[in-house]
Image (tube, rainbow, N blue to C red; front, top):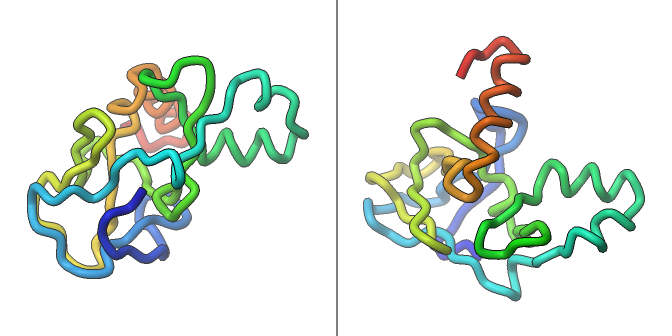
Length: 134
């Protein structure tokens, strides 16, 4: 669940991104997992979904180590947060905090590998295949 005002707009990383609507001070809690805004989807239910729904989840949901056996899906605009190897946010348990002061309009990013270590390999392979070499 987002804890600060944000907007969604063009990203320099990919497609759309989550942008700070106002300045955010270093150390501010920006996002926290909350069962009303962040759904847990069991693997068996995901597997039974039509291909279009699974494709949506492949893009926007992620495995969370603290919730094994399924995917976590942000139901608010946090799903537009992109990965960065030098993110603006740091993941501490179920909370993302600003690593530094963030300007209004700046993209809010996180390290997907902090949510699930196995995602780091997927991100690197995808970047290499796209010629970005991250």
